[in-house]
Length: 445
Picture 1 (cartoon, rainbow, N blue to C red):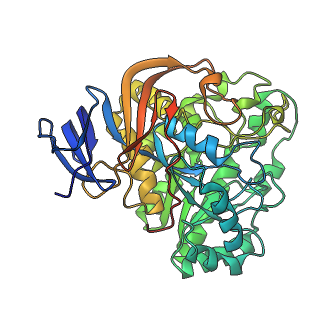
Picture 2 (picture 1 turned 135 degrees about the horizontal axis):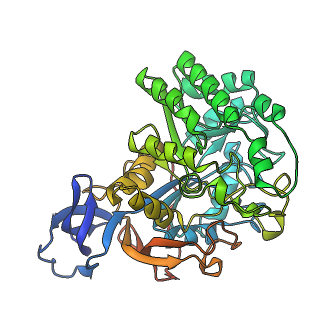
């Protein structure tokens, strides 16, 4: 075994083989071995005893809008990555829109990297963007290390990142498939949205009617058909409509290369509890009814849904006006995703091992991050130390993202993140943070 610098011990370590008492030996920033609980600590190694707190692999969040540069008053790499670390997330992938410039060319990617390089408290990778007119930019972006490409099928909300029409989608997906890439898709059909009732105002019921389930169902059906025809690999972002689950499950059985994610807000919040005018709950697609949520949990349990990620999409407080039609759509939840999901998962009879599969192993596999997502030898020594039986009440002032707007304000959640570790170094502990040591990741590194 190489020179061990750290031994982290707990009565509950979640490994791919299950949960057990163990000592995790770290050398050179990676896990050297998962040893018996009472293994001797090598001379010179630091020893940390987590007691009965659970050692999880650091969470991987593949859906984060950092908005930096250009809209850094909404968020930024410094604040987003601190919030991530406080929530047990040690790796995140940044979305290509809401920053200026958007990540739609290799040159724009380098601008974003230059901003992130000294500010990242966790490891950060980047998605590229597929928009009208940038087909020739996709391969250079891929060669520069993006993990795949995001597109919208309906308006994104920002003019510099337009949606793809069906012909443009086919051209972009054909190009991406040609070099073995992944397309991740905001799947809402613009025709279905245009046909839906569109009244503005504070009533959540009116907003919900304006983003019907069929907008998702139709878009996902078309995406699956195109992926099947092209032999493409596609990923459905932030699934909200449970009606689409049988379609997705059927496509998987047929061998279509489709994966799907959902988000904490769809799995823990319901339309029935959203007060009128409370646009901190606004997101697109929307938070739907409790019965829909039950079906999403079933999709998680049976493996139709592959992972759970935040879709952290923050904004300044003034953009959350009381009118659901005009307020910015996005839920800020980086710091709260783990306790929110664990609170509901435990109520429904799921284990922490399930949560790790959904929030660490699954997202790491989606992005091809082979050194992340599990506590086992050879992986990066990224950990979250978690007290699953403790509770806390969400105080927006205690959140570390830039604008303390959250749909979880006042909720009592199970599970406290004690600390986060990145490559064997403690980066967050009880609200205190080490100096930034996150790396900028490229595909396959």
